[in-house]
Image (tube, rainbow, N blue to C red; front, side, top):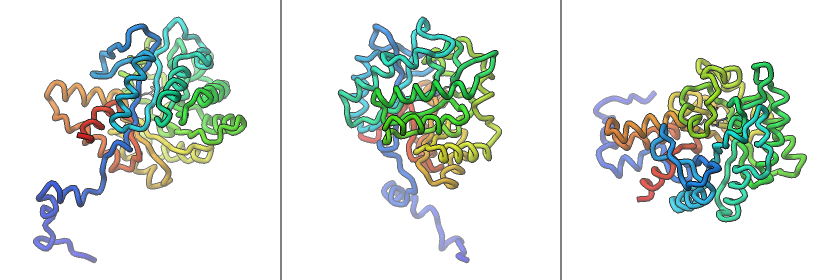
Length: 330
Ligand code: PBG
């Protein structure tokens, strides 16, 4: 047993100089770790502000391509696309999700053409397209699991056909990963990656995202609790993740991030498969607004992301990706 006692051990020795601290650093954040979520909308103006997300905009397709260019200049390799769908196109079943001319499909093929090297991630879930804002089919006030699976399969296939490198089921229906893997395999999309939101909690940290895509108008705050996880639970996240791996997930994700790093750590050490974290809208807005008000130092953003790495994240979806990358590159 090594005795780690003073003064043989003075831990301040390796903290004395900045380069020395770098040499002994156990974790590091680079642009390889960052994924930029981007909001798109059917709109004539290039960019529209999202009041609850300072510095983040909804883009039309022209503006999306400029944004992807700016992001790739900062050496970010991946983007995740989320649509704000015009309310006239929403219905009870989210039918527009299956329209090959919807804005997500156009954006995926447009990015593929212009930026072939960029990895494109697309969510599989119906909430941007349903008039009630739920991720699945609502039947007699209940989100129906198995009928939703059939729609998610079609949506995932369409996203892959439109050019998505990674499809990311965020709906939390049981059995969705298997359903999606089956349809991809049977249509020869052997290399489409499934990034499953394996441990997605029913969280109030998603509020600004729902403003951004306009999915909250008719949603009552508690109602996603019948499919998203209870934030009291950790064992259940291992159960969820093991099922998703078994069903064919290549990468698993925990969401939200900063208040859920115990879950990240548990999943990474149990399964040793690629594990991502989503630093969600509410976390971003909380930190960003405090930075803008001068209440927190701007380094708090990098700190929160590096802590995700320390917990075991291999990559992080964060709205701050572009800004942090430009800091890392300067
Ligand atoms: C929708 C989805 C949500 C987020 C990503 N995909 C919101 C929700 O479940 O209501 C949240 C992301 C964020 O808050 O940044 N299935």
